[in-house]
Length: 376
Image (cartoon, rainbow, N blue to C red):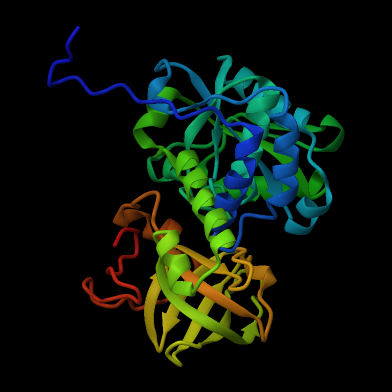
């Protein structure tokens, strides 16, 4: 049968996720964490073990039956607790099943909350334990610190039912929850559960997710990870690394000063660019928020800013920066273009930054142009 011009081509499902692909997923997720998103290595070891028996199918939301329920799974809590406490895959499975029960529909797939950081691999752990496919997409297109900084929030979708599962199977179920209260409810209940918990949130029909979600981000993460691992083997200059990652090189140099954050007030690091002598300021909280070169903002959230160790080409989290250390600052290609109305939610104002962007056609180091919401 021939397809008419009005018919859209069917989405093509990527290759299944196997244990051999975990290093690439972890490498890409660490970059997409933009300096945050939690420590990925432990989650990657857990995922490798889960995938040893069978791969997880990776499917676009649009390739599933429209009424298939996709439940988004992740891990939430204090970074120091997450780094020390090995998560139980059964907790993720229990959280997903419970959220589906409250929604009144059996879960047909697992979704990724954020493709940056630990939660990129945690969702795959949940899918493997449940024997369900993983959706090739996510709700953030990077890592963000709050559960309401999602494309679903921009679309006006509330996160409930929301389920938290702590150690020993202790479970919190929130049947209804407004977007503006979700973060406060999460923080309060995670604290009661010991500082970290498995999370299931945003049960959505596949058709709705296909319309509003970030598409293809798991595949993009794997591709980015492949390029990083290859660049790590090849070595080379900061320019070589930027080219390999299809990124913009913002600066490369020595960290001269670090001013710590004060609660929710951003801190910053000052870097001297060894190539140009420029003074570079990096605003940061859990993630890198903005890069300013000689007083001109060159990148800012929701754009994806990554810092990489120039010797080992290993991504550096914001909490790993040290005075006297060296780094390469990159602006990665965006996985999602945020609408202008999302600026108060995911742009500089959401983090208390008052930045003046350059003209829309202003050049950035390495080529391209600057935009708050992604793209060049």
